[in-house]
Image (cartoon, rainbow, N blue to C red; front, side):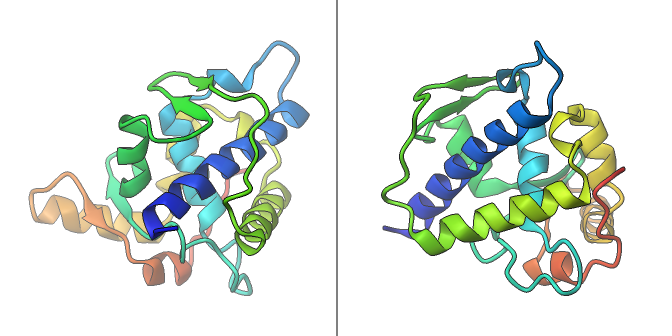
Length: 181
């Protein structure tokens, strides 16, 4: 499987885990499908980034195309895949998520990748179990605390651009690993 297909499938699997987490955490009547594209792209960043300096097994080897944009980090390959409707089990719209397949299987995703994603989401829950139910703009505010975003976005502005690539190294080395409270 090529890298892009694997990245898309890994993100689709992550959405399934986000859905479970949301169901465990959200108040009655608040459905996972109410999450926005902006929310899931911020959650992807938080899940991908190291949770602390000891977190060597992060997801930046898979999700490696983060760009600093005005509303925080965005994985550009996945943003494109979402816009083109390439996720197998979800349709992520600007203001909602449509579940295409309520019982997805991930036989084409290797066990190591699944375990890595599961572990990173579990660590994220430990950092802030309510992150999954925060508003999109709360998530944006949290992402703006990251020095790696601040530096890359500042450079974009200096160049007169709307975005600038955040290297996996800058995200790993970020001293402001902030997941809200």
